Length: 205
Image (cartoon, rainbow, N blue to C red):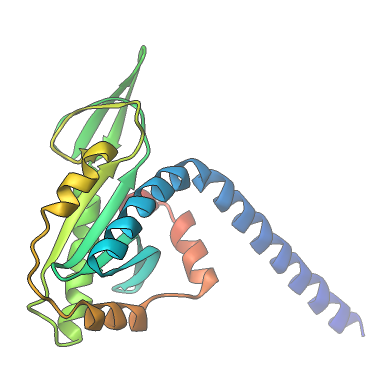
């Protein structure tokens, strides 16, 4: 009996720890999720009008790890991999790091284009394994905060998103097959997702 009680206490402690980490992760992501919702609404509007599909907060295998993709837009053009940044202030630079100025404060941001390049390459890898090497895959970074002033080519403001989407070519791609292929490899295990969100290098994947 003592052994069973100890095991029960350990299990309860692990469950409690998991819930604390999960709640903390949801709280830390709340601000970013607002921007993702704004972008997702425009992507869904485009998909409904032109025929397509949108998946948000997609976790895909990356070697022995995972990567989280904000949005995948599937359509006759192929696949669009969208990274959302809901940051304000003046954003400048085009190198590995961007410069963010908010009043008297200056911060360095990892270039989201480089972050999204990892996602684009990963999507291409999984589609190639599924026999769809010729499927066009493009990347796009959207700064969703209306208070962001961009002096960079690292992304576009949310206001320009409809214009960019309407310029996507109608290449009659079999996007349904690409959608099904990525859904098959999607990581749904909540523990793996939680580890991805908390690992030290999470901001660069």
